[in-house]
Every structure is written in C-alpha cells, then in structure tokens.
Image 1 (spheres, rainbow, N blue to C red):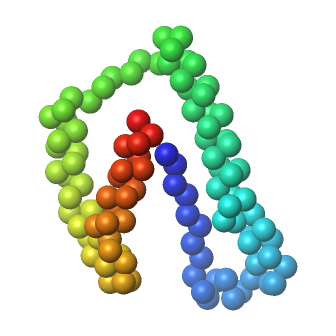
Image 2: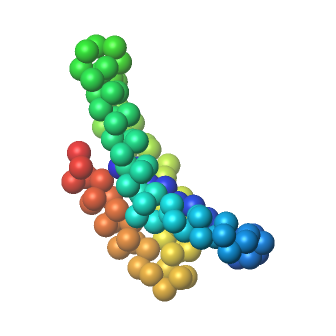
Length: 106
C-alpha cells in the first residue's frame, strides 16, 4: 500500500496565482490517488512477474528481525501519535487502523 501526500505552506500557496492553484487542485486528491495507484499497481505487477520468473530473489525477514524493527520504530510511532493527538485526533487509533488496513492486504 503506497501513501503519498503533497504539502505546501500557506505562505507558498499564497504566492501561487489562482491559475496555478487551480491546476494543482485539478490533479490533487482523488485524481492524484488514482493516477499514482494505477502506476504503482502496474509496476507491482511487473515486479511480481519477475519475482515468479526467478529474476528477483525474495528473502523473508526472520521473526526476530521483524521484532527488532518493531522495537526500533516505537519511539517514532510514539512521537507521531503525540503530534496527532495534539491535533485532536486519536493517533493510536489512527495508526492501528492503518496497520489493520495494511495487514488486510497481505
């Protein structure tokens, strides 16, 4: 699952002309998500075909290595959850929802 975001500060946005802002908005949101998704889906299919043909070696991480990654990421997740909580959103619940969505795809 790929996730992309486009951010621009209010100051920089204000420097753009109305025509430039409209052009950005035209290709943002759902339009951008569909375009990016189509491109990544096609590339993923190519990679999967190469993998199945033996052109790409797949090395599965051990459970121990995966656990180390999870542990190493805890401070980053905690910081992110705190920032999101400060925005009035339940960061932990949002992170769980994302993780559940990723798990459902596997």
